[in-house]
Length: 98
Image 1 (cartoon, rainbow, N blue to C red):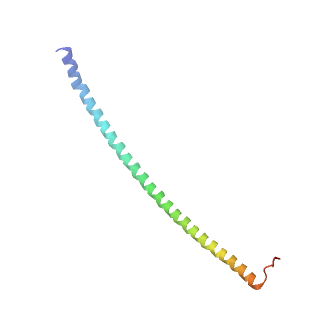
Image 2 (cartoon, helix red, strand yellow):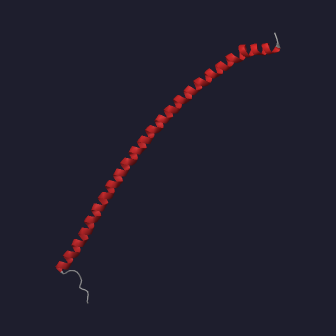
Image 3 (tube, rainbow, N blue to C red):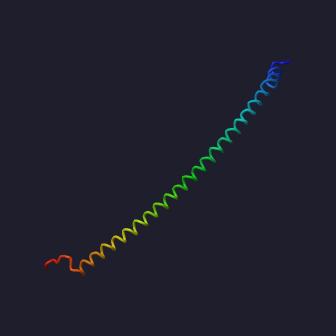
C-alpha cells in the first residue's frame, strides 16, 4: 500500500465515524437549543400579553378616573356659579361703588 492509500484508510476508518458522531451530537444540541428557544419565546409572548392586558386595564381605569374628575369639576363649577346667583338674588353680595 502506498502512503496515500494508508492515509485514506485511516481517514475512512477513524475520521469518518468521528465526524458522523460529532454531526449527530451537534444535531441533537441544535434540537435542544431550538426547543428551549421556542419555550422562552412562548413564555415571553405570554408575559407580553399579560403586560399588554394590564396596561389596557390601567388605561381604562385612568380614563374612568379622568371622566369622574371632569364630572365633579363641572358639578363644582356649576355649584359655584349657583352660589353667586343666590348671593346676588339675596342681596348678600357686597355692592361696589360705581
